[in-house]
Length: 343
Length: 277
Ligand code: SF4
Ligand code: SF4
Ligand code: FES
Image 1 (cartoon, rainbow over the protein chains, first blue to last red):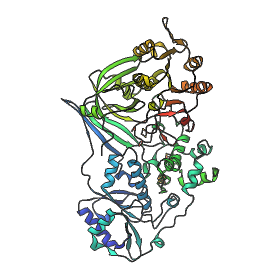
Image 2 (cartoon, chains in turn green, blue):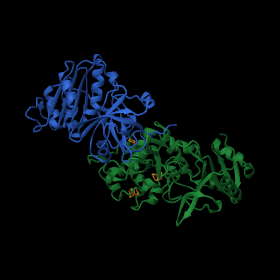
Image 3 (cartoon, chains in turn cyan, blue):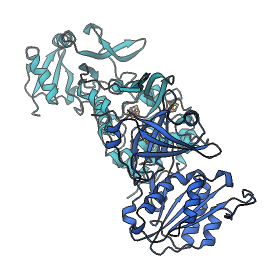
Image 4 (cartoon, chains in turn red, yellow):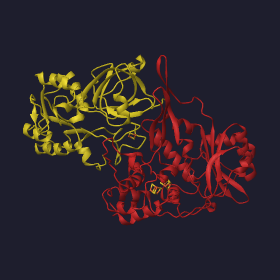
């Protein structure tokens, strides 16, 4: 893509979002629910919230719902009939207001599901989704995107990236063809912009470690005593996985009787004691120590090894959500300090 | 794109009671197109399902040389296997697969094969054993050592009789001390001890070992004592699985997915993995 940039006024942004809704697209955008902000379906662009650091939950449920039908079955006079839920046409969805770290996370998420045995549902939904992200002009202490390969103005994974600049206007980075056609279809709302350097408008998030350093240190840490202390507070509630934009573990369960029902897949978490337990009762990860180690190792050591990306974008949600105040950023910094540097 | 999770419908053609709580099903494709499309290799597994109860993971226990059906052998233990055990000949169940890697038996051409199995872990080896017997001239000596807790716990009793009578293979069966009956003609003793007495030669030999963790733990050192290298020893790993295709995150052992990178591993590969299985 050529890096044409545009500017957009706040009024024109609202007009754009209204036009998308009017055109029948499903718009998901930040909405306030109590003290927190969540991505919710939006009918009225006026209800969209702009003053948040990060939403409580990630937008991954647009690609990977908390529970979804895999197949349904029904016994009729001829025998059992199994139908799947792959739709020919998925309604077009717009995700508005995702942070750059979220868009980066979703691109890793989609790649994980596309690699190897490709997942039809996730792949199909990403095709139907247009991502309009909003750069960060503020951060909080839980944020550490710049240590995880992303940043407050990262365009990775977005179709369009908006950056709030002066006078209630946004700078528009057109990242993909999809983003380009959205601009083209609403050309009157956009102004061609001279090269504006957006960096000065962005939040500053200090890098506290490098992914390469952590991956290297973790490579020999499996039997290190750090995991015991690091995991002591964890109660295994799974909230961290629930809010995380890259966590993708799931379970498969049937609902129904032997004649009619559905097979569903539902979010699951490596934090749960039952996640790995064998039918014999043997559990390869018997305590929270092994489970916490799995969470950290999977994101910072195994995924870089097997899929060539870090399983964390530093969005900080897990730390904000944890009822036991487990702070991932602090944990990783501690690991960097405690484990010997190799090579 | 296809929905990975849509199972084939399989008709139970034959149900055999193998041992207390252990059954074998022979499954035929309900749909001819599915049958034509399906193929697998020895070592692979699948997800077997009872509608309304869920899916359960077992290996394909039959040999790919036997066309048109697959067989599975399972122990009734949890919700799904209990529901499966209630199914009868003529009933329909779901199956998706094949998944996972394979026993590289093409690379074993011209070699001696030594199979060592314990208890309910004979099914994955039974697939390879029949595969090798059906291509008998490709291999040199074929030896099977199989042990169970008691005579009643031995699975595939009919096939054991058949293998015992064949002159082109050697079968040694054993039961744990106290597990023998008055007319038991096999050995008495734990698998690793019986193996030690057999004094297997590593010369041009592949050892394929499957069994409960404690059997595996004491069998590998015996093979090493007779100078088998970790590359000459193959086994399969079991971990809890859901998807079977490397996505649900449940079966991982360090960076390895048992469902996708396994279930077949050499002892050398196991040595580099954390013991999370
Ligand atoms: S692990 Fe925590 S900080 Fe990293 S992406 Fe997931 S929720 Fe965000
Ligand atoms: S949210 Fe906190 S307590 Fe809950 S599983 Fe995650 S780290 Fe453990
Ligand atoms: S069984 Fe789902 S990842 Fe292996």
